Structures are given as structure tokens and as C-alpha cells.
Length: 165
Ligand code: OFO
Image 1 (cartoon, rainbow, N blue to C red):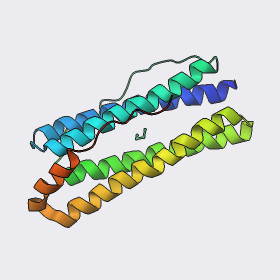
Image 2: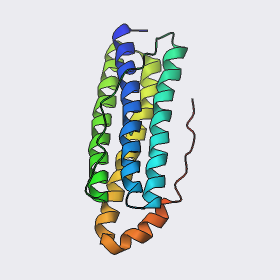
Image 3: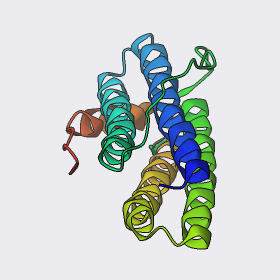
Image 4: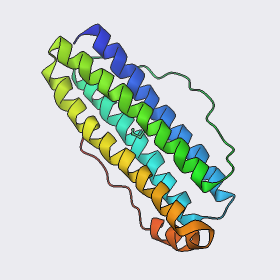
């Protein structure tokens, strides 16, 4: 496969793992607020990011590429509110989307159809990722401080759904 595209996918899969670290740091901040639903929600988010990374790894291995795992930036560990966590998450997802779209542009320019097919999955997934956080932000703003307890209960129901290889 094209070496430039292979390198770019390696960078992205490492960014997915970095995303997992971003969310597990948030999860541990939420633990300090005893918001079990939010903790659960971010635990699932952490697992999803690892699954996103794994999907890229499986793909590269199938195509005869070489996966390389790198070091990561220390994620932000301290926040001042749930809303700050969610807004930082949405900003993070927008950055992921920007990177996925750049990868897609590269795959289209090269004419690498298997990569275009793979990246279509990520393009769709990013629509969902951004929507999830936008909706949560809206809900937190709507319910305010006291309603957070009920919303927290609702978030306990999120479960990890394995993704196709
Ligand atoms: Fe992997 O989508 Fe979120 O970061």
C-alpha cells in the first residue's frame, strides 16, 4: 500500500489511543464528583477509542502495513465542571473528524479504494461521536445542577458494543 497513506493511518491509530487516554483521564476526574453514570459513559468512550485504534491496526496488518505504537501527550487531568469535560470532549472529537477527513482526502487522491471503504466507517462514526457530545452538552445545560442526578442515572445504561473488525 502507499507508504504516505500507511504512515498517516499509523498516526491516526496512535491518535485514537491518545483519545482513549484523554477520556480515561476525564473518567477519573468524574470519579471525584461521584457521578457514576458519567463515569460509566466515559469508560465506554475509552473502550470505543481503543476499538477504533484496533480497527485501524487490523486493517494495516491485513494490507501488509506496519503498525507502530508511539508515546503520547499527558492528557488533561483536572477540570472545573462536567460541562467543561463535555466541551473539551466535543472539541477533541472535532479534531478527530478533521483528521479523518484529511485521511479520506488522501485516500481519494491516491485512489486507494479499500482505504476509502474503511474510512467511510470512520466518517460515519465521527458524525455519531460529535452528536453524542453535543446532545450531552445540551442536556447538561438544560437540566442544570439538580437535574444532573437524573441525567447521571440515564448514563449508567450505556454499554460497549463491539465493532466489526
Ligand atoms: Fe475515535 O472517535 Fe472519538 O476520538
